[in-house]
Length: 127
Image (cartoon, one colour):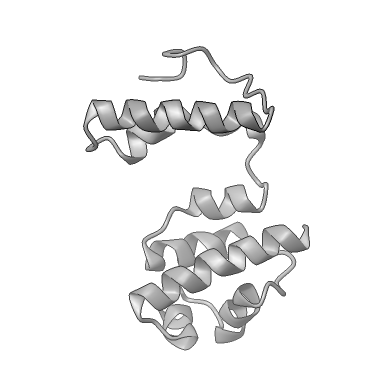
C-alpha cells in the first residue's frame, strides 16, 4: 500500500472526525477499536487496516466505507461507477441542469489532461 494512499485515507478520517467533534479516543470507542488504531490511521502509519475496521470507522463518522476502500485501491477500477451515475446517486437532489453542467465540466477537465475514461456508454450502467 502506497504512502500517498495511506495519507489520503488519513486525511479523510481525520477531517471527518474533527468535523464531527470527536476525539480520537471517542471515535475509537464508538467504532469498537483501539485508540491506537485511530491514531495510526490518522498518521498514515497503519499499513494494513482491516475492512471491518474501516467499515466501523466510516459508520461512526457517517462517511462512505466505499470511499475509504477506493482511496486504498481496494476496489477494482472496473467496479467503480462512472461519473454520471455516481453524480446522480450522490447529488440527485440537484436540479438536472446543474448535474448536466457538472458532467460537462468533468468531461472538459478529463479531456484537458488527456485521460480516456473508457467507461460505459451513457445509460448502460444506470438503473
